[in-house]
Image (cartoon, rainbow, N blue to C red; front, side):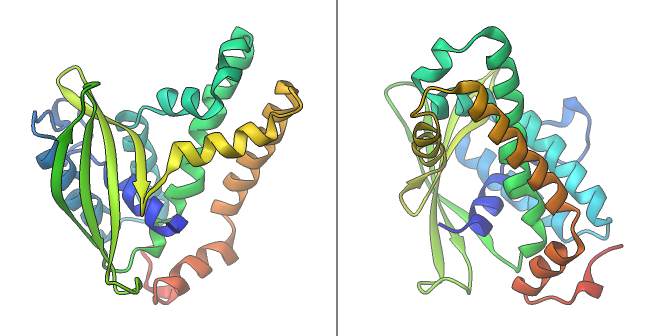
Length: 227
């Protein structure tokens, strides 16, 4: 699945019910309702009249609240995480969160009318939930993209721990990439390279040419964006 659809899939789970107040976080026991309501809210945020900077800040803040990046990061690094020093673990967890955020959230400008529909929720034996959805988009050959969300219940609500788009798991894909990068056992070298990737992603998110390309791919003019 393309980064565009991963971005929409991730962003769809990171929006509050309306206010930035903690009391307004959706606390439903129904995973299906949770996914659908948050998906609807992200569209409202992206289509709002707020500036791009304001939208991105809100998306990043909500992502931080609703996505368990520590779980994702530990899975992605596998056994290498268990052998890392406390300092290496702390640095890696911080870098991984930024890596995911700045890989996808700045791509909100590519939104071009896609809508998400929750078709089924399955509770697995290990207590996790799989919310099966379809992402309607005119840019797919079939008109839809299949997206599964893996959720865990935390303090009566849910947190995202993986996204599976068209059969491709986000964290499994990261694990494969990281395993290859860590084959030589140089964890500090890996962290330095990940740090550089994060810095490049942050710089790109502010690059005028990158921003214009996002709007172009969405079929919009740069002047159409809120400023």
